[in-house]
Length: 352
Image (cartoon, rainbow, N blue to C red; front, side, top):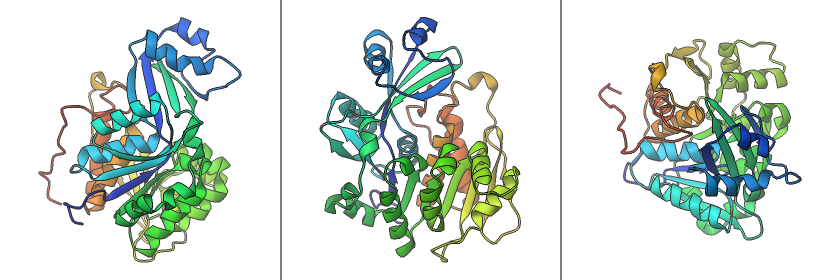
């Protein structure tokens, strides 16, 4: 793939402004939150006041969040400038402005569907010790539509891109947009990469997920997401290798590419199955001293970012896995789904 071409990777999902700060039990109690939990904000409570409280009264760190936006930032971190563009829904407010600035600093191009009436999605993160309490208001992210994707200037970016990455959370928002990208990928023999994102996606959004499955060239998940897929599809196994093999060998629309299933397992080896191949491979993760681990939140998003960067660069599969593991190892040393600056450079000493 031409290294000098711009915006080779196009990503789609739900942008959120992560507003995270170190808090205390009193702050959790004020908003009725639990120390280690993730919930959607309830507009019938005071949850929506949390975001301003964190911004005004705590030393809040602002991150361009949402799983696939984390992945897009990660891929851009490893690729040449102007390599990644990200699509999703945002409001016309100060939160969107902060989000755009954060993405600009990361070198990520964003093309949001702007909703003038609905606020930008936010995720308030209260850190207490090693615990994180996340309270999310999806806002305008929940209103992305096919019309935006098909807008001539946006569709030109789709046609220009050489690979597509979709986060599974978008199945709760706009499956038709996912299917348009999937079909575009198959018709033009471009890689279509999908993240399962969360156990509830295969559990409760099985129909749109399965509709997209024939178009997956790469499917990425962790062990709990893989197990949820196996349960909801009656595979009758909890063996990660067997699940990976089942995912890899689902019926496929584009026979020019063998499907690859990638399952991460935290500190355990990454499992990789390739369509039509009996051997399921394992790749040990990059070891990190315990004292250097700061925050494992977003490690999966980082892995996907490094993996996508490898796919865009046309690297061998084992190198793509290594790039994902390398970026994840950097991310967990940071607070939240972040990457270190000044930029670290992936070691390319090993021969491809």
